[in-house]
Amino acid sequence: MTTLTALPEPDRQLSDPTDLLLGYLDYYRSAIGAKVEGLSDEDLRTSRLPSGWTVLELLKHLAHMEQRWFRWGFRGEAVAAPWGDRGPEDRWHAGPDETAAGLLAALHEGGAYTRAVVTGTPLDTVAAPGGRFAEEGGARPTLGWILFHVLQEYARHAGHLDIVRELADDAR
Image (cartoon, rainbow, N blue to C red; front, side, top):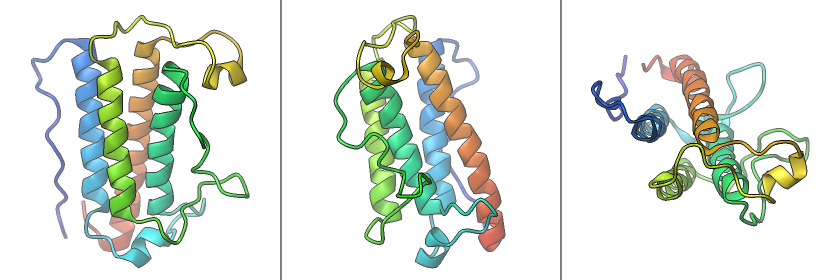
């Protein structure tokens, strides 16, 4: 059995909410990278689950999800393909030319963007008008809510990858 290693969790003495949320986002991005490391191209592109998603599709989903919430959502910026992780059947999709390295790089680029947006911005700042929330209507969320939502997405999908990785080669 292979043991996978990620960055350590944020320091237990850390109490600043922004630093905690950003630290755990970094931790989960690292954990996801560790779970993907060493998988063959076949394992990256083959589903082991009844729902049918693949590891590459999950990576692409995470990169787009973070972009949807921070770039298109919180900042209200124009994004060429905010739902670019979805294919023609409205399910996650990764193309034949997409690679784990490329998608992990996109994931970490998105993380750097998130950190730049969040640093120095109060958690009670409300998302900009327009962008994602112009489509959805209703009250725009705060930065703190968005950070927590994105964190739970990462945590949930890291757990999914735990299962997939164990099924692929018993790595934990």
